[in-house]
Length: 125
Image (tube, rainbow, N blue to C red):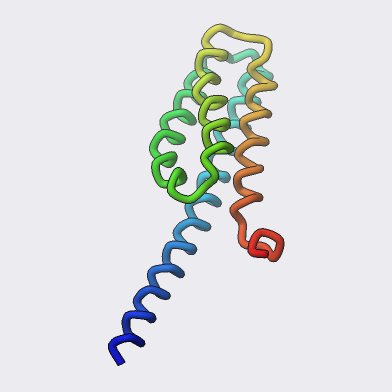
């Protein structure tokens, strides 16, 4: 009977970790995409100071969530997105012409991570 309880405990832990992973990845995708969309709108209005502030908020948010995501996500794609996001603030500060493309790249990288981590038949098998 003890073996059954131990097996149930491990199964409960595994299911809890999967649920936490799915929730975390989805929330990070939604929040980061919202920051990026806001920054793109601000760049379109030539408001680089607000865009710089938004990129800083995105970078701070990403830094808080990255430690959890590093345990769950392929490090290559996570590192690529981290590098892109960390450069956004400097690009906005310097009013770079490539800021909008970098924001779109960051959004695509985050979307790729989200798509690769979702529970789908293709991702399971």
